[in-house]
Image (cartoon, rainbow, N blue to C red; front, side):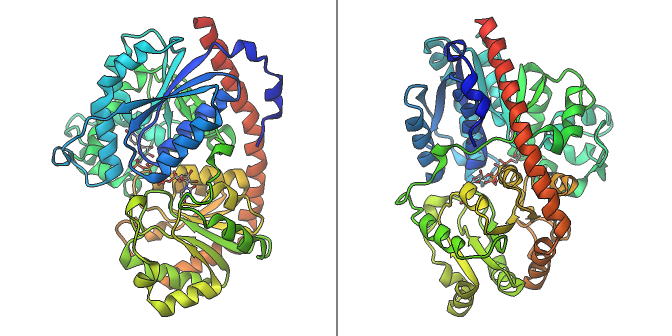
Length: 482
Ligand code: UDP
Ligand code: UDP
C-alpha cells in the first residue's frame, strides 16, 4: 500500500532527521520494528538499524538483509555483537527469550555506537523488552527515546497497570501470581482480563518473563513515547484509557501508528528456503473466491507432535480446501523432519488431496491478500492479526502462549474473528480433529464476521492516514529539537 499523500511531503524537512532502531528477537518483534522504521523512511528520514548478531532464526537474517538493501541511501546497519550468555544462568528454555536476555545483557556496548553516530540521532526507538537495561545508557544522551510495542493496546494496558495492581495489594508479595486475582479490571477498559488469559509465565514466580515485566513496567514513564501497531477504530477504548492516564498516571503518549504495513522488502525471494511461494500462489489462483482456510501459527510456534494429527484430521473434515503452514521446530534452522514421518503416509495422502501443506517460511501478506483466502486460523500473534485486519480476512484464534489470549479476546471484541476460548492454551492442551473442523466451519460460514472484516478493512485504510499524521508530527517535533 502506497500512502498517496506522502509524495507531497517536502523531503528537505525530513532529511536531517536520523533515527536509531534496535529490534529484539523473532519475526514478531523484527517485523513491527522494520515496519515502523519504514513509516519514517517513506518520509525521507535516515535510519541506523542496530542489529544484534547473531540472530536466532534464518528468517530474521534474510529480512534484515533485504531491508537494508531496499533503502541503500537511507539505512545504515551497525552490528551489536552480543556477549554470549551461559544458558544455565537464564530462567528460560525458549531460544527467543534467551536471546531477549542476551541482548539485555549486551546493551552496554551500545553507548560507544550511539556516541559515534553522525549526524547525532534525533530519536531512538527500541524494542519493548529492553527498557530497564537501556535507560541508564540513554540518559547520558540528549535525544528522546521511544519503544515500539508488539502487542495490542489491551496488552499494553495490562503491562502498564502492573505496578498499580501491585501497590493496591500490599499484603501480597510482588509476584503477579499473588497480586492478580480471578480477573484484572483495568480502569477505562470495560471487559476484564481473566486470570486464565494472563500470559502463563507472568504467573510463574521468578521466570525471566515475570522478571522482565515487573522490572520494566514501572519504567514506561521514563520514555518519551510508545509506538503501537493499533488504531482508534479497533482499540479506541484502550488507547484512550492509556492516553488519559486512567491505566496508570504519568505514562508518555501512546501513538497508535497502526496498521503497520508490510513493505516491498518483505517479499520472500525464491530460493531463500521458500521456493514454495510460486506454487502456493498458483494453487490459490485455482481456488474459488473466499474458499480457502489458511492456517499459520506465526514464526516461533512449533506445532506439538501430539496435536498435529488432529489438525490434519480437522482440516480434512472441515470440507474446505486449505493452505497449511506447519512448523515442527521453534527455530527454523533446525527444521529437518519430514511431515510425512509425523503424519504417516495415509494421512499425508488425504491432506494433499484436500489442500496444500508447506513447511517453509511463507510470504504471509501475499497469501492473506489473495482473493482465494476466506479465513485464517492463527495462534493470536498480533502482527498476523493486524495483517488479516488489513486484508479483511476473518479469523479463528487458537492462542498458544504469551499475550495471545489477550490478543484473541481483542479480536473477538472487534468482531472480526472467533476466539476458540474452550481450547485453552495450545502449548498445554490438545484439541481433537472434530472440534477443529467444527470451529473452522463456524468461522467460514459466519456471514456477519465477513461483513465486519470488510468494514474494518476500510477503517484500517482510513487509519493509515492518521498514522501518517502522527509520523509527520513526530518528525516535526524532532526537527525542532535539532
Ligand atoms: N510470518 C510470515 N511467514 C511465516 C510465518 C510468519 O510472514 O511463515 C510473519 C507474519 O506475517 C508476522 C510474523 O511473521 O508478521 C509473526 O508475528 P506474529 O506476531 O503473528 O507471531 P509470532 O511469530 O511473534 O508468534
Ligand atoms: N512483552 C512485553 N515486555 C517484554 C517482552 C514481551 O510486554 O519485555 C510482551 C509483548 O507484548 C509480547 C508478549 O509479551 O508480545 C509475549 O512475548 P513473546 O516474545 O513471548 O511473544 P511474541 O510476541 O514474540 O510471539
